[in-house]
Amino acid sequence: MPVGTNAGVGTAVPGLAGVPLLGSLFDLKSDSLGTYLRAQHQHGDVVRITAGPPGLRAELYCVFSAEGAQQVLASESANFRKDNSFYQEVRESFGNGLLTSQDEDYLRQRRLVQPLFTRRRVDGYAGAVAAETQLTLDAWREAAAGDGVVDVSDEMMHLALRAVARILFGTDVDAAVEVVDRSFPVITEYVLRRGYSPANIPRSWPTPGNKRAAAALDELYEVCDKIIAGRLGEAGGESSGG
Image (cartoon, rainbow, N blue to C red):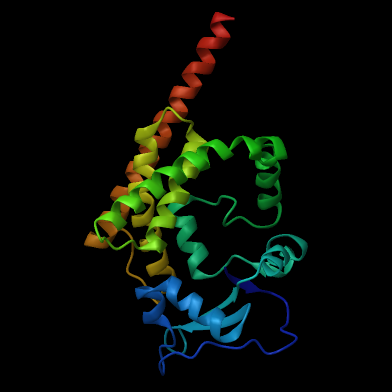
């Protein structure tokens, strides 16, 4: 996970070697997962990655261990900020939610969602995760039987998206799961590409990339709005009927 920090660095953080002037900019854009894996394999659980030319360079400090993530997200979260270009791009796409919020906003939002993560509730999610995992395994077996190639990175992203969508939206909203599975990778690629770039054109410009991302966001928000409206309608019907 890339993070920014307010704290002074007590020891030098090893850096991933990139190309002169641009660092790992093109590696991150073309194969971000492979770049992160290479950084961890070469340098361990905390690695510095640079991207972009001097003066516009992004500097990422990447944490690859559960203990480090706990430190960044919980025990010492006040020392780490979500102010870099990546988080700004996420805010532009999804608003200031838990992933990007800080300080009092983050604490307020975390309190709101905490009831969803009690042990009983988390245990209840197992069925949805198992069902989507089985569908993925069946697809892999079918691909293997036909000598097909499976992109594990993409497949695991789709599995996670479908499982989360089913948990959030319920078992009766297959259309919503399909929309999330289709649109979210488009948005993620767009956000990452802009987040790693030293400079970006405005989102309002009618470029093919901007249009694809805008269409994917519109589709995602539309299905969410429909589900929320449906649930509110159900709640209203129950109240009036009771």
